[in-house]
Image (cartoon, rainbow, N blue to C red; front, side, top):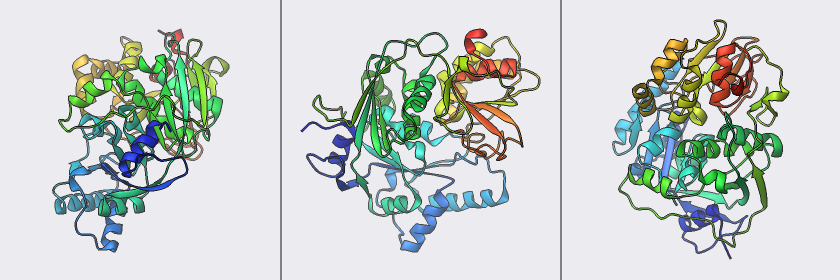
Length: 419
């Protein structure tokens, strides 16, 4: 019986030859990640359990990224708890404020390898499927158990395949594809299933673009999201770690719960309108709503190529005087690359505010909180009511290209009109 990518990796982690969808299994975990929002709760649970030693501290990564830097006394105190925990477990891999967003930092620092099982206290941990890892988000209790035992339980998911053909047209990018899928199929299409993004259009994507797809797999309900493991992936991984790994691919006779063919040649820029990720429309169908704030960043679209796409549109232009543009690179390494490439200067000269690497504005934890009645066009992954600030603010989701064009005009704008 053929196995999908999720089935193959979970079977290996459980010490089994084969698994089937619906099986409940206990797996050995390779990498555990916990970030600042959840680590204090995990530490408390470990204390309650009487756990003094972690099962595999070298496989634990702690990243301070959400409220980074702290903007309240309460949060600063919580970070002190985290730093004390790290001191007590010196073999844990610790990345303090400013290093970047966890989903970018982990592959950058060489923690992510094909064929491995990764869990993290953040739903967008699915991002690492871009490197052929089975990677997913869990809660504090499961994380405490995994840190204590090195294991976690899983129900083996079914798998949905999206086979994507043709090439993107001008000013259309991977963010438009994943928004299109959310709009066409809904946010429950892959609930507790894995997604495999396959086909020539996917194989042609860069690492940055693949990460955008797997990052937002969770927005389609997915437990895991995967793109193919090819030379592009292995060269990236090999340049960051000397640890061995085994590439896993789906078998030719693997069974999928659903298979869909997608053609992107006619796809135009897509926009998710308030207050639901699946409320997606082609930009040509929408009125040019006035926008108070544009946010370019997040684990979804704060990567180098995202900044590059926006900088190309902003270069030599100025942001609309009644619209503020906030640019947040996803990691310090990306910030430095963007600085060397001249993008940071381009953003500043255009009138943007460029911040340090942080989740920040995306979850409404500083560096861009919205006031009552304000409208934001953001490149992040969620537009739920109140996510970025006031409950009566509005969030539109779109690509870096749409974000840059909108920042220039002060209203929702098709990038093909300004490029």
